[in-house]
Length: 327
Figure 1: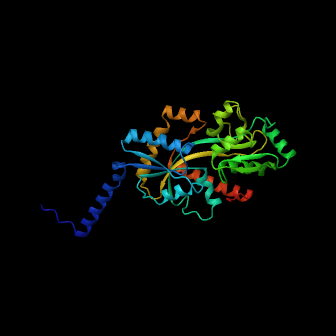
Figure 2 (figure 1 turned 135 degrees about the horizontal axis):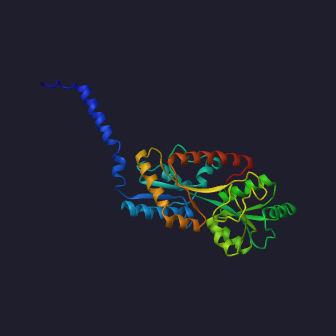
Figure 3 (figure 1 turned 45 degrees about the vertical axis):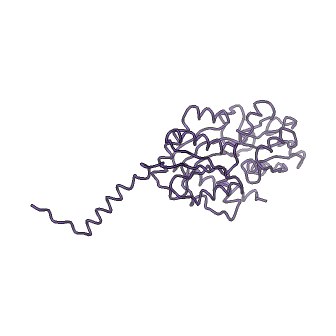
């Protein structure tokens, strides 16, 4: 018996559904089919750059495609971030993001992108505390002694930062607002010159990312008083948190993550997430990061999305309360 012919409309719908079913996994199956670019909105050398280069090597080893690190510093990370926001959402452009990504919406009223709407979170890669350090000539061996010294001589202690709006800057401004202590801000163009001047005694105090000062602390060239995070850090378990040392509620953690342009196919994001998680869990990668004072995190895109929203909200309040602005 001959089967009746399918009406043209139903046949067309059937073909469309079949095409959609077949097309769904195509992105991930064929990905990557060309070189990948990781934009770093910082100059070479900092941990953001090191993270990108570790992932570049590991992804290349797994996929056989070149993974190029593209350093685009400038504009308090805005230049590189805008470049990534405007890239094709195909998984071939990634962006390393960190503290500035969450604080810039509050510090800069005319960003050329939206930190939430224009990007797709891939994963939270790693975290590190800031260390509160002093030059050994500063007669303070604890947070309480530092506060007593600052309050006894208001405006006599200078503090260095890697620049306006950076995590060291906002860490100290939050510290000042919570304690009433007075320190004079000396901004530098990056961490390296700031660390050089605190080592030389030109400034007495600073917060800085652990990877930037940990070795100087271990060598006795700087004295660490506390960690900025809400709980003690495995990289310096003997150091108290600032909250433990007399400033209840103080909690600043520096973080590093990966995002892609908005509308990047979900299956490509899932593949990137799985592969980057795998790379971060390699024993040599985890150990290498920990030696620098950085702890691997990993996780899902959804977890990183929640983290970003929480950080943007937190620092919007801090910026408003402290009156910090970019000169």
